Image (cartoon, rainbow, N blue to C red; front, side, top):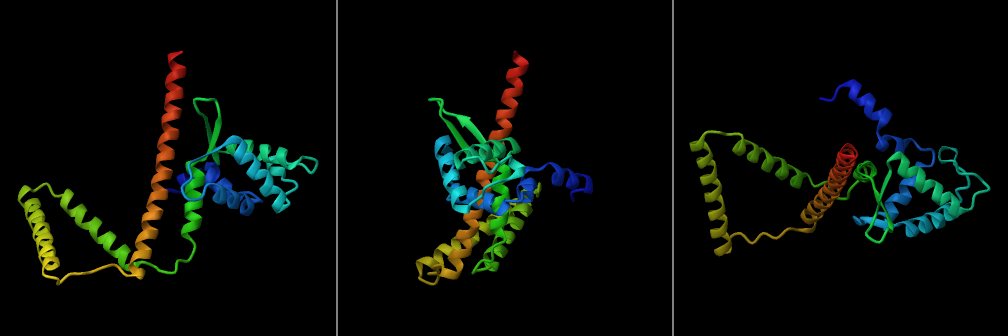
Length: 222
């Protein structure tokens, strides 16, 4: 269990929580979701600035004290201020490619926040069967790989082998022609999609950690 001091630290320092505290959070999160949808990885600097300028004009966002936006600023200037602020706050990350072009990505914090918000949306299919099977499968795996008794592990594998052989036989004889129906396909697809998003978020976190360690090692070498 996470203790109260760790919870307080997360609430006070996590960019994920800060993103949800912003006064314009609905518009900002909406833009990030719209811009980085469908697992899109990175966006060229000019592209995201132009898209944000158009979005701010469409939403008629004139000022924002939290990000130092003023009424006299053009939407292009507002977009630049927002992108710089979001990068400083850890909502976005950026990098230079081999040609020196700047690209922006969602940080792992923003990805996790957006994934969490998306998970709160009521799904048409709950997918109880799929979740149960997933839990059951993980429990079986836990039993198998925490058992250091060789004979017991062989018995478990033999039982699994027998189950597979019996399933193959049923398919050959036409007894098992199961094909997933829509109410079985949809929750499985949603679960795969969510797992893919979480994996992408984890990769971003690993990449960020690698870059931080690389910079630290480089500065020590100097």
